[in-house]
Image (tube, rainbow over all chains, first blue to last red; front, side, top):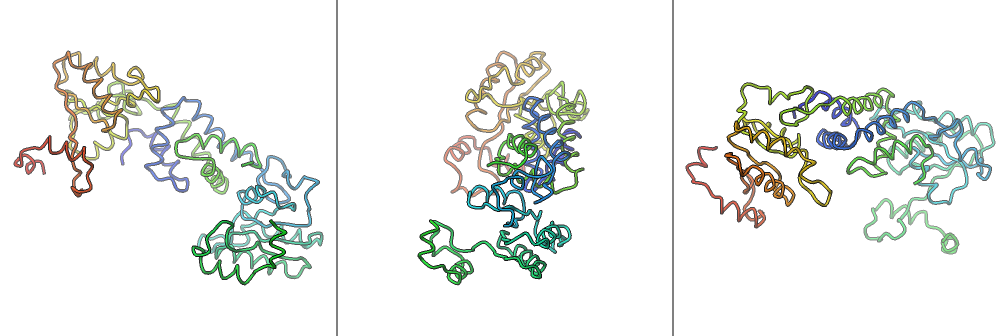
Amino acid sequence: MELPSRLLENAVDEISQLPGIGKRTALRLALHLLRQPENQTLLLSSALEKMRKEIQYCKQCHNISDSETCKICESNTRNKSIICVVEDVRDVMAIEGTGSFKGVYHVLGGKINPIEGIGPSQLNISSLVAKVSKGDISEVIFALSSTMEGDTTNFYIYKQLKEYSVLTSTIARGISIGDELEYADEVTLGRSLMHRIPFEQSIKQV
Amino acid sequence: MELPSRLLENAVDEISQLPGIGKRTALRLALHLLRQPENQTLLLSSALEKMRKEIQYCKQCHNISDSETCKICESNTRNKSIICVVEDVRDVMAIEGTGSFKGVYHVLGGKINPIEGIGPSQLNISSLVAKVSKGDISEVIFALSSTMEGDTTNFYIYKQLKEYSVLTSTIARGISIGDELEYADEVTLGRSLMHRIPFEQSIKQV
């Protein structure tokens, strides 16, 4: 694919570095920007630049923030002794969306993934251990996705926290609300049977 | 979806202005950029800005170009009396890819589309008529996509060119090479029968 302009080619090359965007889509996006008023492209490029240069991470929980401490960690209504460990900011948003968690978060910034070269030292694990070691934390909830990498990360952190008197728990795995049993995968169905809960308790939760 | 940072929100808003990219994908892309080295974002934003500010359009054919006249219009080996009318730069690239056209192009920059508010005056039609009116052009080939909008545009230009002694033609519609007949749509199959060509001619073309 030979492009008629070096400037266009350069833009297409950079856009296609983004995940899930190939050269063809990148060209479509670049041509779209060329058809739009110049201002739209300038707003986009300056928003990207500003975000990358000025964004901060909360000193407490490593969540993305516009200030040194994020709103959740600053809030007086949150229970600071319960920490929910998540992978990234999208998981914080998902859990906040449920409105059912009143503790604080700890954002790891990824999962242990030897294939992609991500080890424990690249994640925000030591600061979590440091927080727990001070003794003010009563419970650490693991809310990582249920994959090989998520389970490995859970287990690694669990071992690091073992020496401190802190309760560790993991979010329940089971059949999604509204799902048909027959379409559930075997592992999920098996686990949801193993970790069954008293019926009275399930009614109260609703 | 409440984002924890105004800077991130701003970037997500701008990215999601692009066609086919929703808020969720925009957030995924923004978080990806935050995980990558700062340089990648800066290269992307400056490539976009530079492209939008500095790109030029060929004075002859309106194709995207880094100079006043594009390489195709400048070339001595192209037949300047045959003009192929296309919608945008991607069509030029597609036809150039076949290696079977040795004339020059005229890029309209879109199709007549009343629903989207695109009329003939927003397209590069008058410059095509002006070129033809000088009398040096022997043939104008319409190579727009075979949609309602494409056909409307073809017909509009055809009427504008009618008063000049110029041959107008349109690219052949028919069954794609390698396609099974039974899966072809009725209109295409009907047209390919109507516009059948002598067998000897079809052998020569291969």
